[in-house]
Image 1 (cartoon, rainbow, N blue to C red):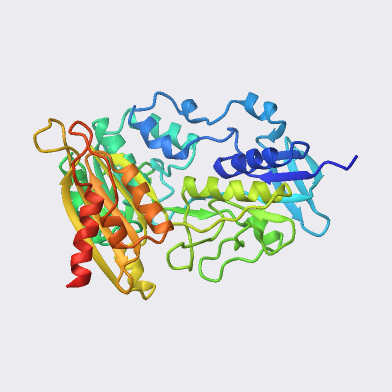
Image 2: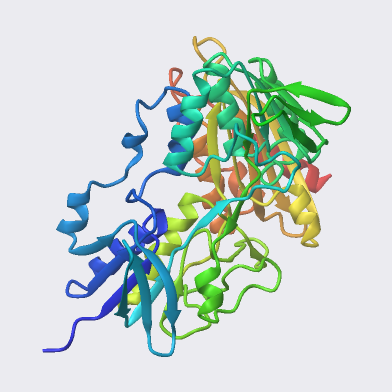
Length: 450
């Protein structure tokens, strides 16, 4: 009888747990060990702002699987355990827990080390009352601070920053969002769509400042305000929603090649690193754009679990490939939904693609049926063949599945003409006769012909 394959996974969040699950389904006999320095097993980081808003009752509700799941799957889960060294020649990892060290041998190693909050070195960032929002521990600290806070400044207008702003406004905290770039959600939207979303958010009482950086956090020991331009904005707390940085200490120690452009772990389509038998997945890994074929960073939970499934299958001796990313994402805040997939006009231009665009404002139900909400759709295609390469949507409802529809169109190399002729359903209480995506594609076709 052959010796069971030994698989070690470093990191027990979305990617790590998905690696372990895929590996177990591929090899029923493998010895699978998942190691994480944190105290919680996998949980939804995306849900943190919604606990702060009171829409989810408790942070404990975010935990994906109970500990019994890992026992059922015969996964050796080791929490509050630090991996201090990786020896890729001896194929061992060294762990430390409660002052005790252990060296464990592996046949396959998967690094799912994720990323941590990026705290820009702004003067005053170390004052009491400055927080990031990345972990349950972060969430608990912010939730406690919210009980006394009357005002807050959030630095960064990506999804996490805006979702947190939504939570604060829901709890009656006067909130200002500061974004250094010239519009909100700059990595996923073009300015025209972002400005539309910003206007709708501001109608709910949040103040948004774009095109200006946070200069300084002021106060004696505790936060009292934030300096933006010539203005001092009063604040009881400051949230740094300025993105994340990959955890690469173990990758560097093991000699893994990093991407030339993004400086995070470079992998091939099987999620293999440059070192034999070491795989990687999740926020610590460089992706490849499905549209441009260029390296990109796509630190989304959906990307992490898709990469992890591929890494887990291959680490367990199977065969799977990862086709690339579109960065499909959606969220809901301030009474609106926003979503995007593929590349923006700006990103396409940077990649040397000439584009044609179609935009339409429609409704989610016929005008005569009560309860319909406005929806704005933007379709982006490359100009030579009319192939769809991106889409952005802002609306009151029904955004997520439309984003998925555009994503599927991009993955299947559909053209604007294909999308304009798509066969869709209709019923007055559910949707309009003419699908907004098809109408937007039709607008782009007329521009292409014109």
